[in-house]
Amino acid sequence: MSIHPVMQRLAEKLKRTDLPEFAPGDQVRVQVKIKEGDKERLQAFEGLVIAINKGAQGTFTVRKMSFGQGVERIFPFNSKVVDRVEKIRSYRVRRAKLFYIRSLRGKAARLKEVDREHAKA
Amino acid sequence: MAVTGIIGKKIGMTQVFDEKGEVHPITVLQAGPCVVTQLKTAAKDGYDAAQIGLVEFVKASNLTKPMTGHLKKTEAPPMRELREVGVLAAKEGEAEVKAGDRVLVDLFAEDKFVDVIGTSKGRGFAGVVRRHGFGGGPKSHGHMFQVQGSIGASSFPSRVFPGQRMPGHFGVDQVTVRNLRIRGVDLEENLLMVEGAVPGAKDGYVLISKPKAPPRERRGFGGSGTVDPLKASKKASAKKK
Image (tube, rainbow over all chains, first blue to last red; front, side, top):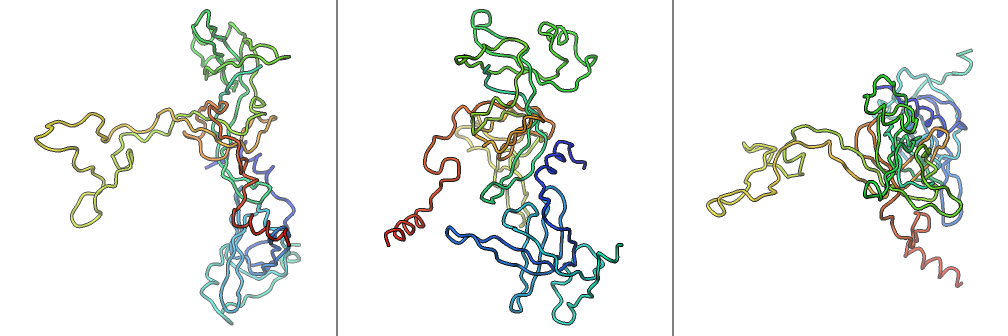
């Protein structure tokens, strides 16, 4: 299904441009705005990007292990909760959605690091 | 100039984030530009109204001859969709509405809400579960699923009461949704963003009008000033210290 040209223009207007480019298989640190009473502070959520959903209402999923428990958070790209995203490193992955990583633990869940920026050039 | 509504077209839905970071579903409507094609007056027609038409790319050769003749009176461009809207008495310094006037989205500059009238999506000949929300039968134990069951008692009254809900044609009805919050206006592209769903399919014509009965101004009106009573008392006690 094609997108209405008006919707496309509107999506571009609403789109957030300050986030860096990242892909599934990247280790990222998402600085999340947290409101405590009247104060606002940042909390980091660091983990592996296991899925990216594109489009006007796009989201990305970050998974991390917290005390042996897998935790996933889904962030909309346009969310105001996301203050900034820092890309830490990239791993070599062969698919766009890394859901298989959920069933892996320890040594089996290791990934090989790659330098994606320089590989392209 | 003041008319009470504008013709629009449903374009699609998306989401927006507000200042608080909360997400809202919005429907994007093409609202106008419209042109007043005829004025109805109490003296001549028995009521006051303005007939407006939505200006869009329509081939003049696709219009019927009566339509072409009608539009010719006000030298309006070829249009497909005409609707009647109410006319408000002109305020001081404003000109009265006259045929040939342009109607744009800035009409809703002072409004926080709008009413939208559209034609719902056609569902064909629909059963009672879909059409009237009946519970249906059990899914197992040798029963049928989406039948309505009994439609009345037996020897008394020996007839079915009028108004018994039954299967039949569903959809393609005029549906009015009131008090949709305006979430954005784009004057350049003639867009109006309203919160929530609007009846009908994409590209369907809708009539957007000023709210007939907008919500009263009260605490929490506008969504920003909502106070959680529990937290409010906490804050008050904190200040006392």
